[in-house]
Structure formats: C-alpha cells, structure tokens
Amino acid sequence: MDIGTKVKAVRELGGGLNQAVPEGARGVVVGRQFDGRLEVAFTLPGLLGGTRSVTVPVAAADVAAEK
Image (cartoon, rainbow, N blue to C red; front, side, top):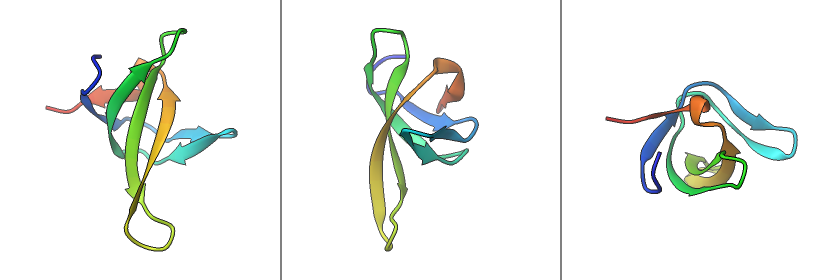
C-alpha cells in the first residue's frame, strides 16, 4: 500500500507497547518501516470527547484499503 492510502482495521490492533485500535477503525498510511510493516495514523474517539489520532505500526494483512 502506498502512503496516503485510506485503510480500515480488519481486527483489533495494538496493545502492549502500542496504542490499542479497535476493529473497523479508519486511518491513513503515513509510512513504512524497514521490516515491511505499515505506519498507519488512525482517528479514534477521544478519552474526554472529540477525536484523537494515534500512529500504530501494523502488518499489511491487518488493514484493508477502503474503496
């Protein structure tokens, strides 16, 4: 996937040292790591309302390109 591609998480992601991202969350590919994983900026509901953006490294199989 190219940088700028809009994606959707196909399963729950993250946890541990990475921010948790729920299944179905929408994001944009913002980079690629040396090991082939994608860096995706997801927009999530904010803790006190509104929204927040988190960037999480994911495998290409964990996200699907939106049409």
